[in-house]
Image (cartoon, rainbow, N blue to C red; front, top):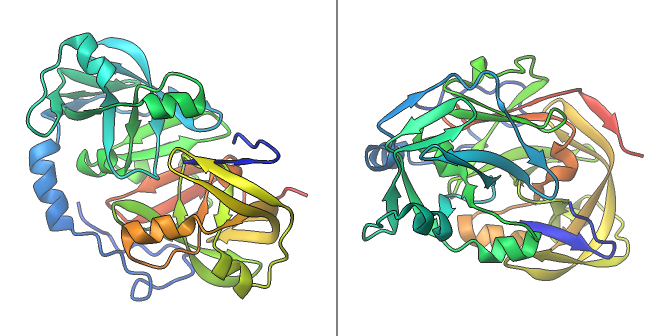
Length: 316
């Protein structure tokens, strides 16, 4: 999760469905250990789930997407939809509020956990201090919904940025809106999503999809490779980073058949933090500045990423 200063932007198993992706499965392989996921599901999957998720729930999208949830019938509580985070957790304040006893893994059992009309029964959650997030975003944050939440519960989230709604479905094909512009293969590394991206017609480059980030990021190596002109210096600030960066604008950034023109990006070494976590080369990150134009579907079990809302947009 990061924002940019100066100016102050606030910004089942794999189906091998390649869609119209720019990389073949052999070249863009997702090494997620599905046997490990099955073991984790045995420990962390909820007892049961009710509701269709078809109507979705209204979300607030400002610096980050904020999802209203209910815990044991109480709420709403505000959680970040965060694909830049592998895990999921509630603030320890909620644990204290409900008198929830933690086990040796700092996990607690909930009677119910609800997003809109979708309700999970008997789910386990981790507890942690969200004070840093609350301070950084200057508002109360009650938890994070990271990638493992959706993977372990076998559901597919669609975050509709223009409509400001979140849909939760057991299958990607059942989630509205269903008129997808394009599907691309989604690589899962370190339990986080990555997709192939074309920049100024060059690539493909490996980009992390981070719903908790404001601007799109480009590594210094990728910027040099495409001969990108760098602009004024700025500072990239986040809960864990405070790094120098440079303003720049790419002529085009494409994910499959979806393309944005004249997109401002930040060139930074912050991608090295992601590389250290996944031990693979990372060329950049897609943030809210790109995603805000579309409805984004994360089909984790199918290892594919879908965008709806128009094929080409010019920001100039």
